Length: 320
Image (tube, rainbow, N blue to C red):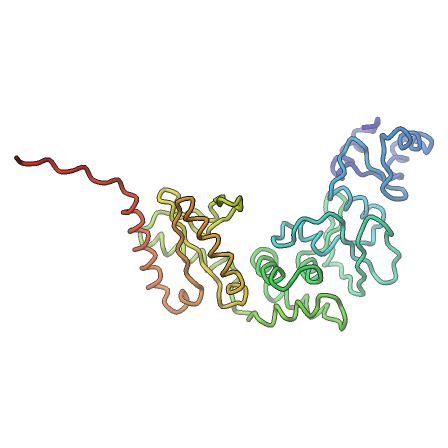
């Protein structure tokens, strides 16, 4: 790294190796020195007035930071923002997706530009690394144009479970459902299949089941226990007893996503059996109608699994 002051060195490290021309000038580096640093490859020009220190690798975050420092009006959104929020089902982006207002002239290269006439202050989150990112509800909505219905349904459940209430999701949709906006039809299709009372997968219902099993005498099950299947896929059952390799999963078939995922779940179950695990699946519908009976069945299945794995008793000695 060039000879920066301690303060600028810390700022550059925080911003994934990105620095602005003004930062350098304020640190006492002249334009002549800056041109020399670019010429010898110590600095890499990203945009006009924005550079990356060559000792810092170019990463997706560094490209996002460079774009945001080059144009303070843009916001990283869509699957790019979803990936940074840790959303599942959005894949791994390679190019920053930026949201810009219609009257702005944003960056012309290195990014995918999406236009909007609705850019609320609460849709923008400023990160410490200089990246301006769309809020989870706004990022969720903007993902709709880049995902198919199945993946967007799964993403919606994930976001409701971890980032926003059902009411917030609907409010975001109502705010942005202008005629012709890309992705609106997909959002409408997905939300129309979901009633407000339905619980998101991976939340309270699973916890209620695990607590009921513990109260019924089972050992405390491990939540989201990590298991690698023979095909390399890593899964996390809702509850697991590693001592007897037994797991329970709660399927949410009252929403369309549960039916769409049935084939994938069967494949996962076969993979679990291949590594010696037994999985029991119950549905949200049967839990809501026959909760006590389902819990009793699970307790009995766990007992049978434990007996199956118990070592055989040694033969009793003969009296002869």
